[in-house]
Image (tube, rainbow, N blue to C red; front, side, top):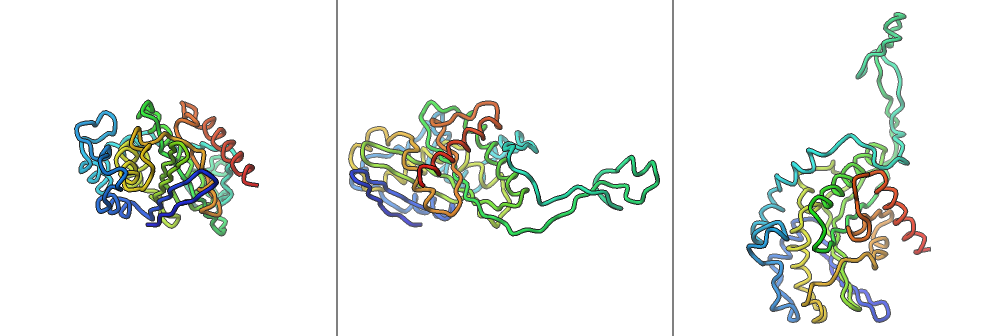
Length: 284
């Protein structure tokens, strides 16, 4: 775990970065509230499962460490072998006919050719690493349905990238602001050397307690000004440039308030890519 503060004129940004879920859970469990947030305990409230998805902090901790079966089912049941980005081309495989394969080639069967099966030729290539970041910051009005829809798009996008020869790190972030102060928390939930595990990423990617229990607890430990005691800030992507500085190639899914996912994943991905391109252009 690393934490630091960046100052840009009158604006101050508190940044906390976790290498994995275990670090995040350990930090939240063992770190006391700051003097400013000493009397605040939104992360620990009980009996409010309609808003944060769990009845207690202990329940959230169990789900994030042991796996969230309902979330796994929500993602797994709705995943499709779907290309959400029309511009990604899978150049690792070239179609061909062969003696063995996965489906028969009927024309070759009819004329008696030996290569009667469809197959694909693999072209080995050096993998490129991409850091995918999902900003889970959301207003109270963001529906669970919207959260799940975007989670499905993100998983399909990673599958599509990795089939095309990329390897992806996946991070879950929370960006918020209050007057001249900003916060950014970042947790890696998938390493580029790992295949995607729906069971492991379901909770941090689509459960409201990731934000409203764990990331709220991180805020409660920071020496922010007292204005944060009222409402815990609001979702933003204003200081997203910080994320682009952390890694060589970063692609960010902005907050639900910035771009709604809707029912068309292809159109949503186009909007997200345009937004990322605008951020990249602003950096230059």
